[in-house]
Image (cartoon, rainbow, N blue to C red; front, side, top):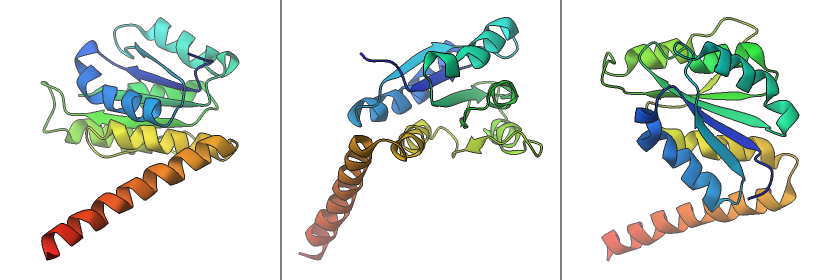
Length: 163
């Protein structure tokens, strides 16, 4: 694996089944990433260190998934100039996921966090790749091919249903 361009972090290992989808799509698109647990509440020093050092380590985008109070994406965004994509995770202590969605979505002016749908880590991975692709022609081609494949699947489904 080369130098990671995307950092995937989550508040708890229990978030991994959701966050693995970001890793999977990044791997499919040939984007190097790293993945780890960084809890805003239980390991704040680790969160500070991770966020402040990410750019120096070559990270271009951070994907941060969290459930419940979901402070991780916003706190990381407050500590770095890098784009942060928040993934609200419907956790066991969640209020049907709405607490996570609103915690990530309702950031104050000056500290933006791009927010995807509940448990939509795959979309976070695609968005991270799209951000990086603005300066990477090879990745742009991979994304175009990926989206063409999505289009083909829909067209094939339509033909199958219409037959």
